[in-house]
Image (cartoon, rainbow, N blue to C red):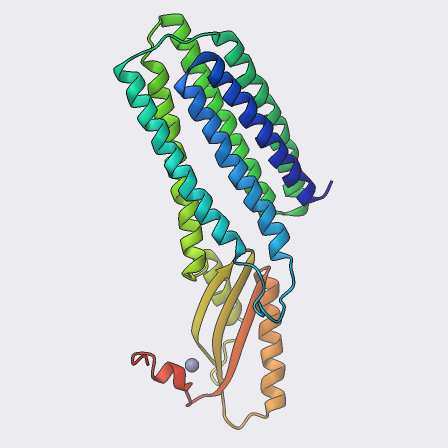
Length: 297
Ligand SMILES: [Zn+2]
């Protein structure tokens, strides 16, 4: 099965999980099961935008979008992150109400059975996805699988909490567990939104990747050669670096261009998915843009 096939399967499993967990909440009236169902909504959001990322990012650049379609995912992650935050706040509100006026849980056995069954389904899928992700080195697939595993742990915590309620009769445990799950969902919602902001604001690549770029350029260091004005950014799975390559003004254009090709190839093989834009400049000349960078128009 292809990576996009696994992602589609994971969307289908997420929909089934949400249905089963919502059923478990409806049967029992437990707010922690409701928050567990919401956690699965986070997975659905994660799986659908991983799918979007794989499909939309693969669209070639065209006349209207000459830089490609890599940024499409940021719209969905920002929107989904916002939705998830609102839903998590609603859960916290419901849990606080339940703390103030506790209610007995009903049909706990059926609710727990549905939750355990859906978690087993998720665990099996996550295991298969992780194997495939390692085989083809797909970050989108691995991220989605790790998310599923987190969800399985959350469900395990909710099940333990409800078993404790059944054993002790402490009804306040249910809203307490719900609030812990909701806090985790808030965290995930923020990280989805931050991802979207980072992308739209052209945040620099991660320090290890920047170090890798520096190290690659170091391989070309030469007294007559200088690299400066290095800036990096990311657009979805695509990574970009812009830099200047300064060299003696007497070098022929052919010699300079040949060296640039070597640098480009070294950068691309060091960092997968990297696009390098290298300006060729004489040693003593800077670009107008950089001379006037402190005086914007
Ligand atoms: Zn420069």
